[in-house]
Length: 320
Image (cartoon, rainbow, N blue to C red; front, side, top):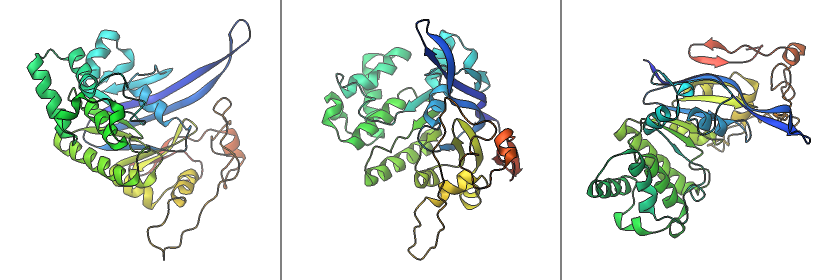
């Protein structure tokens, strides 16, 4: 099977400037050379601590922010090499669901105007066709068409996120980046939104890139999962394989923090020492060596190679 999305050595550095001459004195390495593929129809998860570069990766893939280096191939076409007109056309096949369902919606616009904006911009539809499309979108995400004249502040958090999902579906995309779409919602509402996303994926044959720090949500929704730490990918595997047999010490620590579902289950918690290093000055060698319980001098001096440890299970660690 050919991948729908191929990411090759993606980097996003933010320059640090100082002085009267605004001289660049360094970089914040938000994303530091990651590679992965996403197959058509799957849900690919990206997990990690806050600040590890998950959201920057999602936005760089769509070129909402310009990557510093690397390639992003969508259906065989290099998004990073496209000019403005080519990218505008390609973006009809891609979309994004944002983390904050209130901040991502213009409070001055009605739901009708919010949903019609991408349709007017990209599709040549008559007024009656736009109204029919609007009604279809509202009903597809579980809202009533009469609510289209309301403003975002008149909806609950879960309803606002449904509006965000409807906007993401407006142009019938094939690929959607979901940037922690349920993290701002109550647990009961999270379940409703996740079930909705699953149903939409089955009905519309969608491909998701699902960014989250909640491992229980990732385990429920995703098919394969990549683990990021300090801008780098440290492990990638099918969901079951990753949760049953985590190889990287950082992944093992993350898994140990997930609460056990049974009160009888005994689980040893792995507590990491120290603080996450700054992305302005990441460690030489393995990015995790300053907190790793099995780190050696090799880890402190040499960056581990990204390799396939077992079938479809990739890891970046010298001792796995």
